[in-house]
Each structure stands twice: as structure tokens, then as C-alpha cells.
Amino acid sequence: MRLEVVLSPLLYPCRTITANHATVAIDVLRATTALCAAFTAGCQSIVPLDTLDDISRYRQMGYKLAAERNGAKVGDAEYGNSPTEYLRTDMHGTKLAFSTTNGTRTLLLAAGSGTVMAGCFANLSALCQKLRDGRTDTVLLCSGWKGDFCIEDTLVAGAVIEQLDDISSPFGDAAHMALSLWQMAKLDLHGFCASASHVQRLVSLGAQEDVDFALRTDTCPVVPTLTDGQLTI
Image (cartoon, rainbow, N blue to C red; front, side, top):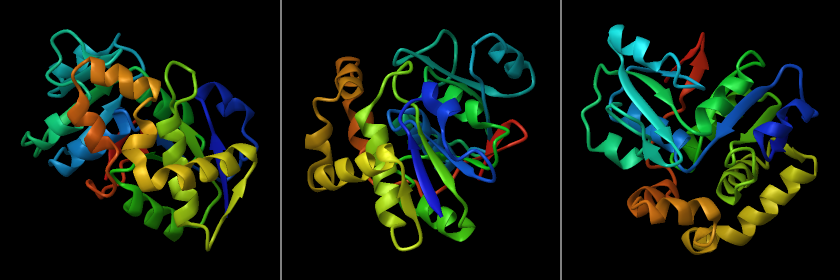
């Protein structure tokens, strides 16, 4: 089982593993963490959308709208992508149409290339167990920020590689780098990430609670999986 890390969606077409593989989309701050939180709070299903063009149409079909751009909730959407907000809300039976700056685009980029899952620190152990059960080559696709590298997404990839080291091997320089970074950061993850650009961006927007939550492991032990255009667990 090979684990390849792709540091940005812009590099996904350049990945080496292309056939018969799974993809884990990682957007710790905050899309994939929010997805796990919404399902933990009882959400029924989530449709990821890469643009806002069609999102209002989903309201007419009974969906609640969740939309974020540049860290802030969009327009008249009921939700943004705050994981702590979802966990404070009874989401049972709710269907969401969900669009974010980076994470949903990353999920949809990988659609059609095999199994696509959402990964983060919040579901780390559950995710690794699912990958362990599947035993297939896997691309760990980091969302980054508007195409740029983000350290916190790369750290999740490194944590996955470490947890699966008995049945897999890191494939390529990015995977080895992710593992090394994680081994440097894991004893003080919050401190290591404090100066990260997206951490600072969210803190400046008043989202310190979300940052703190997103950097905790195994708080939402579900693995959202994309099938026929919608995420379920």
C-alpha cells in the first residue's frame, strides 16, 4: 500500500498514483473538520459544490445552505464552515448543500478517480482504520489555500502515514516531508501551527475556537465518503 501526498490541488494532475487508488481530501481549517462535525451532529447527507452558482437551487429541494468564502459565511446561508457551530446544533435529518473556498473544490477534483474521503485530525483514527481495511494505494490531497501550500493539511497527511507505517510506505518526497513535519510537530501541534498563515487568518476573524478544535484528534470519528455527488457516512 503506497501513500502519496499531493501538497496542493494544482499538483493533483501531476500525481504518480493514478490507477486503482483512493483519495483523502484534507482541509483541516476548516472544511473537512466541519464535514465531520456536521455528520457527528446528525447530518443526513452533504452535497459539496465548488461554486455558489447553483446553491440556492438546493434550498428549493429542502437542503440547508452552508457556504463560506475567505473564512466568512456567505449571504443568507444558514451555516458557514465552523465545526464548533455544527456541534452545537441538532443536525439530525438535515441535508446540506456545502460550498467552501478550498475544501469542496478539492473533494470534487478527486471525484471519479476512485473512493474519495474527507480527512482531518478530528477523524484521524477512524480514517486510518478505513484505509487499513481497504489496503489500497491512497493519495493524500491537501487543499491548501487558493492553490498554495498549507502546513496544517500536510501535517494531517504525515499523521496518516505514521499511523499506517506497518502496512504502507510513503511514496515520493512530499510524503516523506509530511511525515517528518508531523514527527516534529506532534508534541506541540498548537504551538507548531500558531504562526501558520491560515491559522492567523482565522484567528483574526474571531475563529480561535474553531482552530483549537480542528487541531484536536479523534473528536468526530466518522469518515465522510463521496458517492454519486454526495457525502455520507
